[in-house]
Image (cartoon, rainbow, N blue to C red; front, side, top):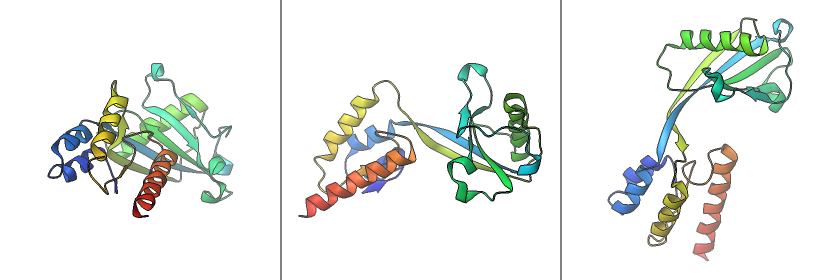
Length: 184
């Protein structure tokens, strides 16, 4: 089983099946950046409602989404802290300090969060988000058809039928089930 980015699977499979490799390599990817910001709860001056929020694309902000980590996963954040996980659009080239400054300003403008974080961490994920362009379903069908001719090869990952972690876990379980079934 290959559970990796489609372009990496394509590179690995080029000697086995050039057509399959080309299909896999044709899946487009965007990079993503997340910022984790930790605040002292007694200094945090914004309401934590729901699990987070999305910023509409028409707002043209760098911040595209934000989750309240402690609301979604209380065991990950000490009770005296508030942690935000912010998702940034585009492919920011600026240094971490500048990017944190931009996101802090947008958080102040959108939700009134003006406190200074006690910790910030920027994580960059180059070519990590598969893009489902027009014709993606046909491409996936063609990939699946090619896979049928290669006994024992299974694929899982965000390039096929869902980009989220639960989607990838589902695809991994499905591939594992097919592997077990083929061994019987």
